[in-house]
Length: 238
Image 1 (cartoon, rainbow, N blue to C red):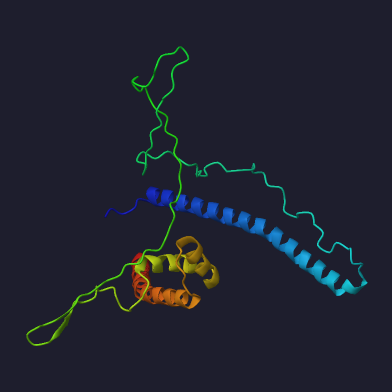
Image 2 (image 1 turned 180 degrees about the vertical axis):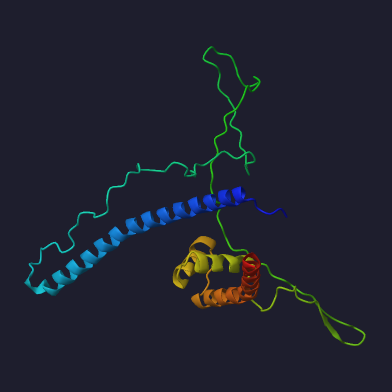
């Protein structure tokens, strides 16, 4: 590995310095934008506390929750998406899951029958949708046989994933962990999603157990990752 020349080291230092200054300015601007709504909320709470303390002296028709002028300073940015922001416009896909053909069956205004006319081109509007989702139940039937000679009973083994007479599979558990752990849905609302969207009733207790199981399985990988990160930082420093 070649040693850095003074010129290259200075150039690297300046580039890092510019990046740090830019990040600090952006952070400062973000903090400034947030400080105004916080001051507004403090003022609003204080005012409401004062009004509620004097509630007995106010007439029934008084408007306690009147609107206040927004204290946030006017931004120089234009409304809508900012420059450099990647839009989320729906795009045509090259390999749709289903294709239907709509044929030209009418006659031309001149009377010519177009049924056997060669197709010149075609338009291709696409509709995105999600098909009805329903939980699928798989039953594992294992054979039980008795030896006619000695009377010994033989049972076919269950698949490895089977641990109980009735249980949830990994895909369902993954969705439950995603909704509870990442989207932060309460247990009750997550249960409602499973029943309303997947037609799969599930109890809040089962959801909590699934979340605990997922957390336990993540402990070891996260610990290994933290160890590797610490080792990398030590290598960089020394």
